[in-house]
Image 1: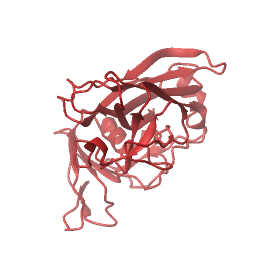
Image 2: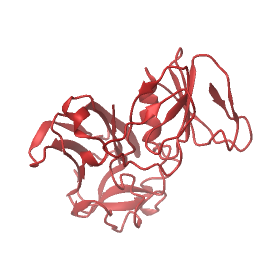
Image 3: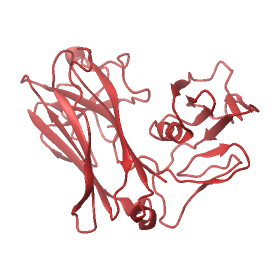
Length: 296
């Protein structure tokens, strides 16, 4: 079953190649504007739409294609006893995507983004030359939420290479030579301990990281898991840095991602972002769309 949107009101789709359906699902769940995906198994083509079939277009029969639909305003909360099922119908769950596919039933669960305000859209934003501390994070230093299309230094435009769902704001370092923000969450709010201790729960950790022209001001974001006594379990996963050479001296954000297995006995996750400057003056390190998804 394939989604076909062929009216003038349809938004442009995003096309990427992924080796399996799960990666296509995760991409949609990390994109706040994604409502529908169609995945073609033979060509491994993943197509994302911001429209719903009930609004525009139609579902048409096509062998080897799976279409999945997710509702807007999906919550990352998953009760510990719940385990949604992906079936052959197009039933919608608040925390999982469901598919029109073959009659085979596959048990799976994917959470929404566990990180609160990972997209810098909660609270106020300021121009590049002012500071607005990000809500829902513990911030040390001048790290700020900054408007796209700010006039100061013309740092980032919405026309620059950025996430497809960039929103209005991104994270910037502002004036501190080194500044951090940190957030800790309870894994058990989203998934129970059984699958975690059996090491069957996977994670996808991603963000868009960047900087200003030829400067090496940069951001690093780490993910750690800890047990009930806050002792670290497993290893540290790190995104970045993205340096000027990686960006080819262009003011932009680049996508970075790491996947892994949630370690046994994990109870809490902690995300720590550090932004540093290398040339003095403004800290031009930038980041957006920090995302942590768990799935079984």
